[in-house]
Length: 99
Image (cartoon, rainbow, N blue to C red; front, side, top):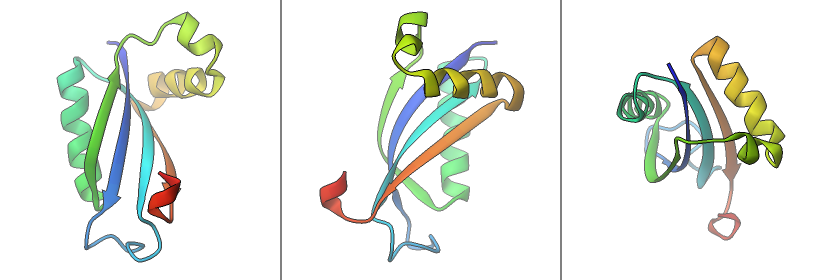
């Protein structure tokens, strides 16, 4: 089963506990899944449970050794996903100018 990499831009929903403090987030996500579609479906459920609304989804299902040679943190997350099945890394921002 391969690890899929996704980059999301998300906004807090009205039920998010920090909706007044956080305007949004970029989320790097690695997931061990049967298909890219399965990975996106799992993420949709997770984001809904965490009170985030997906604004933008970028996908890189073919992360290569070259990709990871310039992105060591990404390689660590990819390897962690092999153990934990999925890894989310949130980079929040407090103003629209930061996105």
